[in-house]
Length: 497
Ligand code: ZN
Ligand code: MN
Image (cartoon, rainbow, N blue to C red; front, side, top):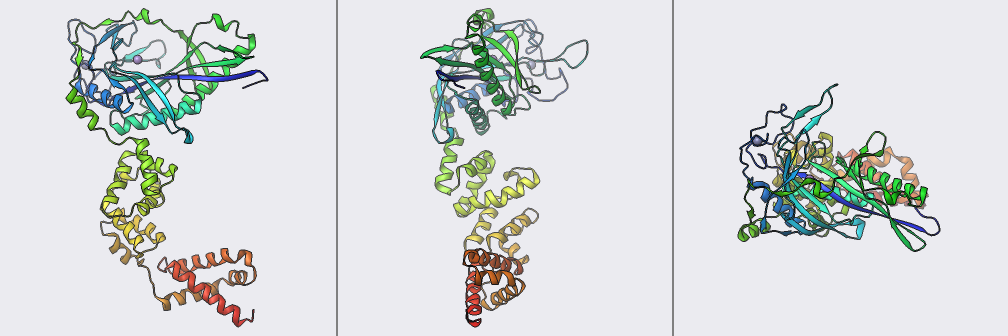
């Protein structure tokens, strides 16, 4: 938005709660399980009974460190647990165990592709904490409390206010979800609330060379990518309009506030005002010992990190000749990208396999609403199919039919090609016959080739397609093309043209 002397710049920081994919909770042995009967995954520890002692889940620390390393963070060799006190029905202990002044990971960054101009988003910290339970408001006259989620490990990631637009925040969220699923530290399902995004939004407004800032609004608990983009878009427009209404006079006196996103109405709405940090009365949890990380163990975790999505995409573009968009689709599912690489290792040509993943296998996967990896075809057979096209045994079109049969039958692609009669025929007599048939059935196209130089090429292509069709995909397209051109020259000469 701008008039003559006014420019605006949206400033966004993000807080994300990522539910870690541990089997049990952060400080007790209860199962982490979505959709279980209410209050059946609880014990005295996560119910906050007096006299119980929490015991730290080592896996949760490892998952957090993996994520921290992938986010280029510094990992603290010494960290501790703090109690964050507040009273709420879904928090039976009246405090949440979190990390206050010594977060496990801090001072990192996350790099985004940013549509060709890469952007670095600073990571202030990533700390471990336990989740609260759930208040359920769907019964008239009362609120129900389900404590199954209480004590579930969460990694809270806080970015610098480096995101500059709703689109960039959207890209960040998508990439972060990809990262945590790649690392295997979270299932990252937004629907199940395993990733909850809370953007902090305000706007720097510059008028006549003077910069003003609107109060920061935190938008709570966004659980879809669409909501992230919509809420930030709305919020920055709202803040600018508010500011313009009274030249920022009232805004100056207004505190930062929490707002919620109303998905149906497409607006944000005010929630309770934000507590100051000291209201939480943080203090070290006396029941838990500090965590000291062994340097050798840390090095082990670092070494075990897989190639990250962004690097992998870049490699597929360079080594496999994929477009950036195709690489994004394939890398989006780690198992599928792993399968592609295994098929290459099994002897398939990278470029051809990449093409088949994008054109052949992805189509079959889409029809069945599964990922390519979930089609159940192993890497060796995928590699073998690519080789058949590569060495000219079958056409690229024929590969589609063979692939489809490979889903149902365990025969080798070569055997299936033979059964289906798809082995390419490089037989001039046979091809000549197909060409005659095609020309006879398509006199109009032949005439176009002879009389309309502008459309000649397209019509020749059409005729070649007809030969492929008549031959059931067995004809060699190159040979067919040559023979069509030769026949048309003969016709031209004999008609005295
Ligand atoms: Zn428990
Ligand atoms: Mn938190």
